[in-house]
Image 1 (spheres, rainbow, N blue to C red):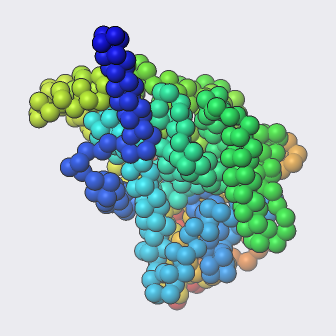
Image 2: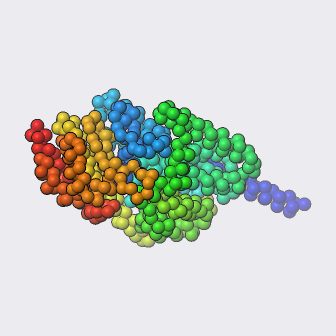
Length: 545
């Protein structure tokens, strides 16, 4: 009897310890006591704000045209809405985030060229710092504090995160919401799949917000929601009392917002789905092979972290997140039109695995239970040679890439708009014509002056094979310029890339234009040609004013 009673007591104690550990994992993860969440956030915020100031290049038109440009129009009464807004496939949810920023700048009379150029990215850097913090917290819950430290290092050192995360793309904010939401999803945090109802509801709310900003984010939450549904004890309750009410509430509020802004009822997610998935409208902007994300796109984003990421996947055996990576990359591979930024939300997941691998190099006991890891790691204060080599390798490969892409490659569009904004601020610009591929530069959101501007249109045609205005110009710039001169009044300034300027130089001179300024843009091809520099021509009559 004594032996039996003792064994029962031992089992009860083990079960009690296990339950307590699971409870702590779900609710109050154990972070390093020497470093608080506030300190981590403060460090990440300072890093991302510096990051945003160092990003001085042009990456993707949506960074300007689908966020700040729309907000600028609402705040100041002028700005350009692209064809997507006329067809109702964009929600006003994301642009309105920048509206209070513009209002505050105007109220404080700080809406100068420098602030108009930098402030939106500085605002995004605050959101990005939140994303960094929750990557740390998610890693700590999954693997412990040692891995969390190196996962954060991997994220901050990765060149593409540095290059893209503080840009005003909807994908950047989607990435932040994805990281925070994954932290609150119990099924992604524990091996048992036990759910905390409060935590799960927060995850649902944030997932719904991510989908409101980017409908394609639903790809991620189909996977996560599927795991949660599989683990849920009461599946009907999960679907009808949690997912459906929260999803309907967020969708309803988004529809009300768009109803107010569009002036009519618009179901943006449905229009977005029709254009990008059902009609393959995105293919108009180019297509890639099905394997592009695996062989080029995502591998370039992960870059020199790849071997550490692969090792982390193998040794961590965290198959839920590995499956999430494979699911998202596989789904987007089906679509013809592919871009780096589409898979940005899962890049931090790969970097968590990189952090796991680095933590194993520092302390092999990382793969042991958390309590053993702590006991072992206390004995080590210096990095082993392999760890030092790994850190130097990652920094030596990522820092030059990050700085080159952020400060050098394709900086012409930003520099030319900064120049024109200063000139317009001094009343030296009357009108501008952009003879560039459409949306190749920022627009009113950076110029911040209500003067006539014109660019080449590239609205997708419903008829296949029909060239838009931008393509017609690129095909025969001289002929296009001659027709333009006969049908339109001459602007005070013309902006074009060097590749087209060489063909149009004599025509521009004959129309009384002279070169005013030339800005470096790129060392190698961008899109179809080497756009080595961006050139500004001014009409002589205006240059004398």
